[in-house]
Amino acid sequence: MTTTTLTTADPATAEWAARAYGDQDREAVLKMFTEPDFYYRTAQPDTRPEWQILDLLADDTRVLLADGEPVGLYALENEGSDHGCHYRLDLRLHAAAPPAWWRAAFDEVVRATRWRREVVRLALRVGEFDQRGLAIARSLGLTEEGVLADTTLHEGRRYGYVFFSRLWTPTS
Image (cartoon, rainbow, N blue to C red; front, side):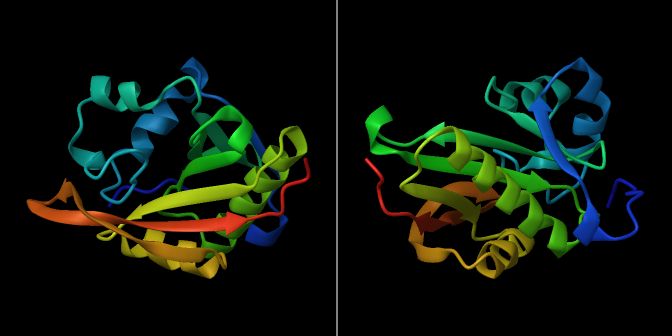
């Protein structure tokens, strides 16, 4: 498995930032997709050619930085109508990221999102085959809503997606 080396000694003290994906991130992001379990918008990350990986990086993709280093990707998409305040989060950190970084990254993304807009429901979708992703989603204290079965292929088998969410009381 290919991993990225992190220079921060203490995961709890990482300084988080995000920026739109750009040319300066290309090498680091392509390296993330060489990890067999970097399931950012795909169930087969390490089998995709470069052009397909770049297609996954839509205008909404943000590069997560810990202490200035690219460590993952996220994107936030509207679910339903604009006024519904329901969003889906695609979030993935590379394999070397410790579990504490997942919580910190998730908390920072949620905090920044709620600062800019009202959020009533935030959903994450994790493949049934993604053991690390499932463990992380469960550790975040999200509500496990259920499985949409047989919706994707992974290593020649059909799997579903497990839906997780967090709800907030509408303010408007």
